Structures are given as structure tokens and as C-alpha cells.
Image 1 (cartoon, rainbow, N blue to C red):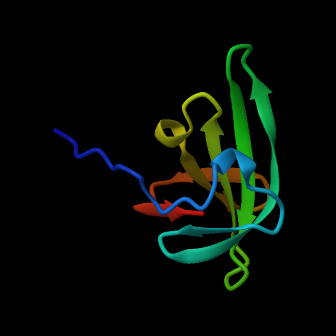
Image 2 (image 1 turned 90 degrees about the vertical axis):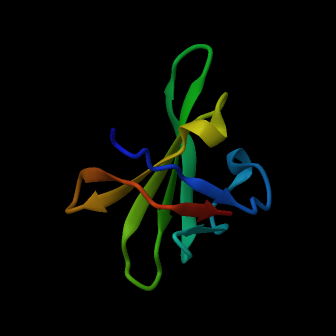
Image 3 (image 1 turned 45 degrees about the vertical axis):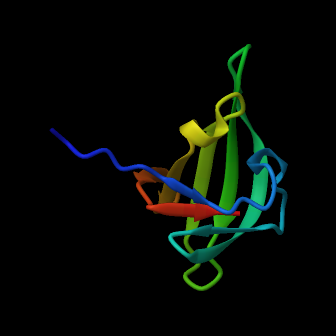
Length: 96
């Protein structure tokens, strides 16, 4: 049986849905800055949202994706590879 990786949410300072440009977010303890927070797709009864963040030290870019009606259980993290491709990552912790 395969072990399931569970993303641990540490000390949220406010609702994830309220993060905006300039706010800080940490993935595996590494500080990220929120660049954009927007609606990705409206599914009628739920909205799929994206938060774009970047690591100032490494210049890497990430997307935090979630559904607004099940925020904590739907968070997924993607890292930008090249110019256009986002690859799913499985960090151990996230906090904001």
C-alpha cells in the first residue's frame, strides 16, 4: 500500500481566500511572496482558485491551487518549470 503524503497546514494567520499581493506564505519553511490571487475556473457550485507566489531567494515560481468550498482539503502546490509547464509538488508543510 502506498503512503499518502498529507500537506500539514501550520498556523494560518487568516483565511487562505483573503491572501493578496505582497502577503507572505511559507512552503516547507521557505518564504514566498504572493504575486496574484485569482479565479481559475467557476464550476457553478464551487470556484477553483489560484494563488501565484515566488521565492525571492531562488526566483522560483509556484501556484497554490484550491477549491473555495473545501480549502484545507483541496490545496495543491505546483512549481513552474520552463516558461509554461507547472509540475505538481508534494511539500510537507505550508503556512500563511
